[in-house]
Length: 409
Ligand SMILES: [Zn+2]
Image (cartoon, rainbow, N blue to C red; front, side, top):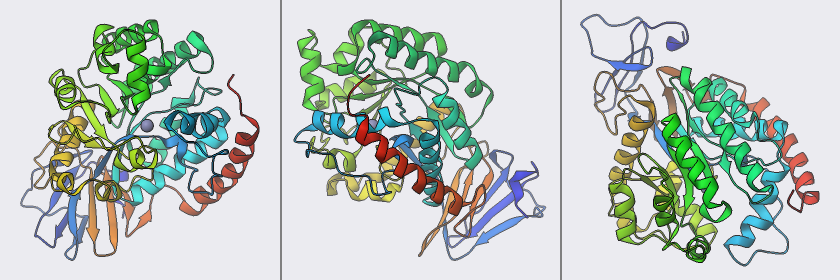
């Protein structure tokens, strides 16, 4: 029997090796009662943990593991990495390749025990409807997600940015409003690819929708230099000057923020996301100003959502504070989804029922919103072989399109 698919009757996860149990009914944790439920999933040789939260990533890069060709000529700096790789890839995405990428990424995330994805999406030739396609994949496979289209002017100017912001608004007002596992953000690619007018408009939209901003901020010195050329002290100060609300804003990377800037951002209600693997890969530096700050979570920025790998990429002193990172991620999720998330067990009644069960061989079971989505290392919500085969086919198509879609527009 698969407990949560059909019933709101309580069921029990555990006891685990520490004697911990979690009582679940519907989407939440509930208090234990004297009567044992009909369905229990004991795991006496494993440990129940809260599901991991990936606080900044890109479902659109889900096909990268399928032999993505290296950019040519080899990029020498961050902007060239964007121009020769990621902006070429996102322009080549259509509905079919995006769907295959998202489903593969989500399936792998769930099998790795990651239960929430905070996604930042861009597909400039397929904007309208792109977030619905991602939402479909999230709901099909059973992952919790915050979705947003990263508005930018880098290909099509103000009209492109408008389309991106409209896509965000459509999701927030539409299916995210009636879902418990789906939320929408107002996303901006980065300060350096948008005008003041677009940032002001994004700020108004955040306030009108009650939705958070999600942006790449100070990822590289080029973002800071651009804001300074426009007359601001930096990209954070630009957001503030243009009245973009920072309350619950998700600011990814922050590599070039000072300790004082990081503190100012989080004092204004923002969350910072450290992406150590991506920062190392892009050679933009180590985000050393972040880790003294309690409102910092971890994100994989398009790398597979195995959050242990992200922890391993932290500097040793920061690795020692990983529990604080998990607490920040749980608080961030609580703010986004409007229900408490436990950062550690025991989970109080009313908390979201998002858990994973881990043993010596890895992640064994995964529960998202009370739904058992991985059992005995097997995805229950879709056929992983079909997802992988579709991804391999789509990847070949995408690499061929990338080779020809070299110029903007
Ligand atoms: Zn990113």
